[in-house]
Structures are given as structure tokens and as C-alpha cells.
Length: 411
Image (cartoon, rainbow, N blue to C red; front, side, top):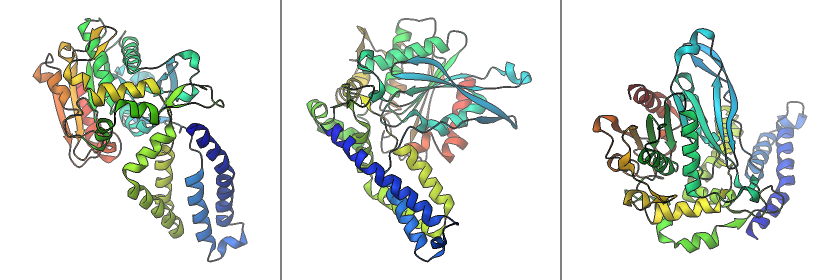
């Protein structure tokens, strides 16, 4: 019922969003004589703010059409390397000139989170990797768009998907896996199981960034919610059925609009201030800062539904029972043993100010992977970086990405 009420609210707000958008443009149009009156800029700013608050946000485009290699601009083509019901493996194929085609840049599998936002949240991550890497990204499908006939999607299915991607990409060359936030757990499980089975294709390196390998270390507000509520609470309060106007009608999901409400509730004052600053930027005519606000919230407000099975499995397996660090996780009858990993080098990265995955949660992988020689394990703490700062922004581009590139090439 809650999902249906949300859809009714969206239908109610849609005309208002369109009206305020048109009004904002009308009051700021140079062809409108009223736009030169003292009150026009205030009206345009107010209507733009209401429009931003009430509008629908859809999955953003990647908009990665080119990169720069050795000082030259190279076109980038976005293709689908593998299409599965719950995930599309996207390849950012660089159209290299003939004299650069033999450079054999490392092949990277970038595993994006399935935690509310679209994979495009890693746009800056991909942009920085592209000049020196052959990049593939897991682009998770909004669960409300997956028909019931596709079946459920559990945390163990996520592990199987990662294994399938590694096998495919590593069939003809080394593959290097980078996981950001939530997927560090299923990625470590996938690589552990492949090592235990001594599969012929295994990742050459794995880089784990800001993830809850062991949430018992420096628990954050996110960890606290998972441990203070019983499993049944998450199932009864957060899981809803997709309405009939979507392809996934009848599927049980953790709706994106509820996740978004949770994101906002973590830092409500910061978001209120950001929206007020946006209004002031419009009043002052500071188009640069206003556009930066628009770009950020176009991404931040675009959310997807998570499959209920995956979300509930993650709550229980990762945040309540700590099965990975405690050694009790079993997938398809096989125990997940990170200590069996020997052929894959490991780099863990944490942000000093990360309020999503606290310090020590990702570094825990160093101790769990006892079979990897110490010389092939590294840990890096990004001073002054929050959660998003370890995969986007200046610190990511100037410090962290070069460190990952060097680690990949030296391993």
C-alpha cells in the first residue's frame, strides 16, 4: 500500500513540477519584460527550488564520451558486454589509434554498489580509470523493472554474478577487480570461492574501497540501525510490492524512495542548507555553484529499488551475523574462506572521515586473507576523505586512483 501511495504522490506532484519549471524559465527569460523587474529573480529562484524538490529523478546518463591518452583525445563507446536479468556489464570501449592498440592496458572490473543509487554514481571513478585501463562496470538493474519471471535475486546470486564476470573477462587476459563500498563483501566471497576451487581463471588483483568486510570495527550509524532492529522489522517495515505500472509488478523490493528518505535522514541539516544555498546562488546569479548543486542532486536523488531477497540477506549475513569475518558464510554448500586466496594481490582503501564504513572495516580483509603473502597486501588510509571522497573528487583523481594504477601494474 505504501508504494501505491507514493505513486499517487508522484502523480500529484508531476503537474506542479512541470508548472514551476515553466514558471522559473519564464521569469528568467531575457525575452520576458517582467524578467527585468526586481522580483523576477526571486520568483525564478523560488520556482526552480520547488521544481527541484518535486520533480521525478531518473537514472542519469554516464556521459563518458571521450578520454585523454598521452595528451590526445580518444573517443569512448559504451557497450553491453553481458546482459543478465539483474545486471548489465558495461564496457567503456576506447577507440584507440592503431599505434596504441597494442598497449594492453590492464582490464578492470569495477563492481558498483547495489545499495540504492545507480552505478553512474561511479562516473568520476570510471573517468579517472579510463586513460590507463580497459574498464568494465556492473550496471545493476532497478528491481522494479525486472519481471517476476526472472526469479529472486539473493546475496549469493550477487556472488555468482561476480564470478561469471571474472570468468568471462579473465578468459584471455588478467582481470583486476575494484569494488566500492557494499560489494566488497560479495566480491571477496566470489574470489575466495574461486580460489578454494582452484579455478583456472582468478583475479590478478582485488582493490576494496570503503566496504563493510567486518562491520564490528568502528561501527557507524548505518551499522547501528542494522544491529538495533530485529531482522523481522526490516522484512515487515521496509519491504513492499512493486505496483502494476512497472515491468516488475508484484516483485518484493526495498523501494528506492524509502532508501532515499534514509539517506536524507542521516544528514538532514546538510541537505536543507544545500538547498537553501542553491536558492541563494540563483538569486546572486552564481550559475557555477547552482549547476554543481543540480549535477549532484540529479545523481543523488536518482534511486533504484533493491530486490527484497538481496537486501534482507545483506542485513542478516553482513550486518547482523557477520558471517564473512566469523567464517560461517556458506554459498552453494561451499564455505567462504578468504584464507584460501593465494594468487590474487590485495589493496584495501579507507577514508579517514568515512561515516558509512568506519576505519578498520575494510582493512579487516588484510587479516582474513592470510594466504596472500604480506608483500602482495597493502592498505591505504586516505587522510581527510569521507566515504564519497575515496572514489570521487580531487583526492580520488590525484592520489587514490594513481595509487590503484601503480598497485595493479606492480602486482
